[in-house]
Image 1 (tube, rainbow, N blue to C red):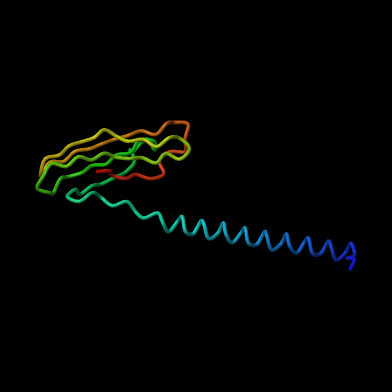
Image 2: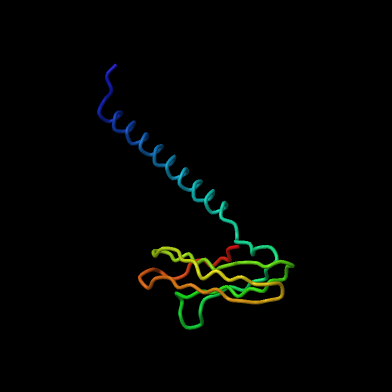
Length: 120
């Protein structure tokens, strides 16, 4: 059986539409899965921390923590810097009851701080 040019064109267009819809669904599902896999960062046990950006510099972030536990704790700030590489601040060790701060700075060529977390 010979297909006409019109039916062949419709078949190709229908196949492309199905493939495009399948790809769009896969991308949308992948993005939803990736977004749901990212959970808010938890503060390490025994520490109470406040994080933020420097008041006049959107590229500098900090973690100010207090050790509420019974043993020494080490922590540092981690900055997700968009287009620039992520950076870690200095490691700070706190004895029980002590407070301290770790700071870090994203490179100026990037988009600034996208996320600030406290690492144990």
